[in-house]
Amino acid sequence: MKNIILLLITGLFLNNFEAQAQETATTTYYLIRHAEKNRLVKSDKNPNLKEKGVDRALNWSKTFKNIEFDYIFSTNYKRTIQTALPTAKSKGLEIQFYNPSDLYNEEFKTLTKGKTVLIVGHSNTTPEFVNKIIGEEKYPEMEDRNNANLYIVTISENNKSTVLLNIEI
Image (spheres, rainbow, N blue to C red):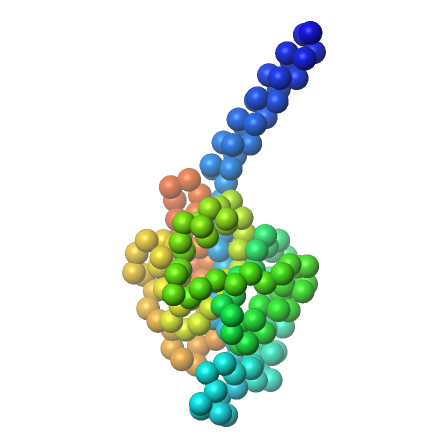
């Protein structure tokens, strides 16, 4: 009987500890814009990456080699998927899609809480996504030819911090 009570108390303690750990877990978002796209056909709204973009996508994978992602998100466009793919393959993860018109909603917050997440977007949606996460208008839209920004957002307890790096290839 003592063993059963001890097991129950231990189970309750571990469940409570796990719940507290989840509440205080650190969430880290890595946000990048898609790599260089093919601009030869002006009317193509969904172009592939050009050769330099493919090289950049591979470079992102190398940049992220020591980061254990829980999720990789991309918009559903060729250029963002192609940018995310080398990292997703190297991590054994499937690319999840998000709606660039509905950034950082409650479902996304809940799903990614306490996780490490890569998000691939566009020159306008990537800084906007960061701003939504941190709750302030800190980052302007990226220059159209800028494919090198890496935004890192860390959320822990009530603290939010951001870092902006420029990773050239």
